[in-house]
Image (cartoon, rainbow, N blue to C red; front, side, top):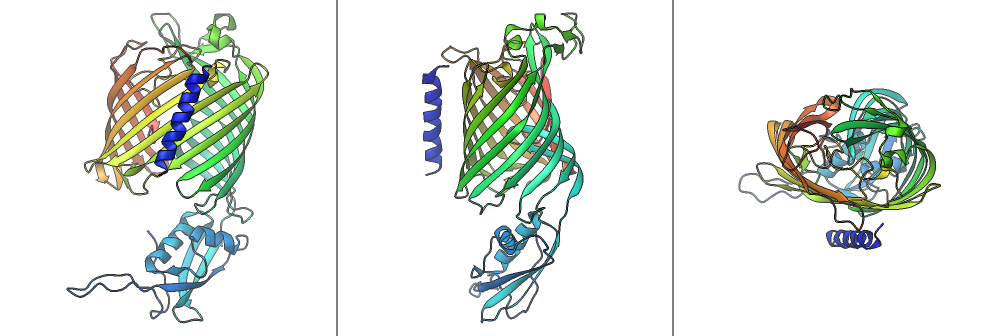
Length: 471
């Protein structure tokens, strides 16, 4: 691996990150003590917001959850000066936390003049089986057909669940435990067990192949928040990875005379794929520096302003050869009135000793649309890639702040190669897409891309189905 390339990427990333750093119920109670919201009447002077002092929070019905956990999710503590809006927002945060099945609130006068006591009638939430959930995170999308939720089982506000997952060419089981979920928690930590199967796609001579890679292991993570925008975390993953000794044809190809499902024997695998088959025990260390200044206000399904950025550094230890890796992912958004402009840029590099399933591929929904997934890279993968996307998103149906349907135009470009090498040709795709909001699924949609550069397959366009956004 070229130390010059990786060092340049890391130094540039750190410099960039450093620069970037420069609906609820109204409370019920005594009318004389209730906080009042400022307003105007005719030509009179604006009324003054009446601020009161929170004397205490009195929960009722909490058999497990401590008062400190409740106050943490409220974002309030005794002695705080609050008005009606702050009180409503605090109770809404508690309801949205998922700690309780129900939260009812009212206020009563405190012992001192100008103070109040917030009374909460709550019902603890026990383990529950949830069916049908759609999720998309910053790296892809997945469905959870069934999950056993164990949130707040010990009363410490933890997030815990056992989930059955299916997603973008993957599926399996995951169990996680997380502490420090609230924005006011400075420290967060957790553990996760997983047993997943992934289908690694590659192209050779215009034929699309799939290679199954099974992963199982345990990961531990620990992190620290520095204000609301910046966080630093580290994780340690002990994992077993098993790549099948045979592959299979993913799609029919009349020119090559192969059919979907046909086996590809080990002797016929590309050299880069064959070198990575078999079972490997390994340990991976990873550090993430994350900056998130995205606005909570949303239009057309997107933040209206702000930046999300992640610098990731990792190192994997295994018998067949250790290897480092690094990546930088930046996403920013701007409200243009008629819609929202979203921009993304990503660069990633990995050492040449990494097996094919840890290397990088271009083409598809999350890199360059208009081309089949991972079709722009040789079977063994690239040592480095860089790609960028621009999207203009506008509401087609419904209110802009909560649209029923969103349409968008996009332009993608990317390039890859080996560290120290010149890289391949620039791949460019453009097109349009739609996202439809469907209840528990979230935003379900399709992207239709036109290849503007050479493609490994004979297509005038390529479509992709997705849950949520590609960035």
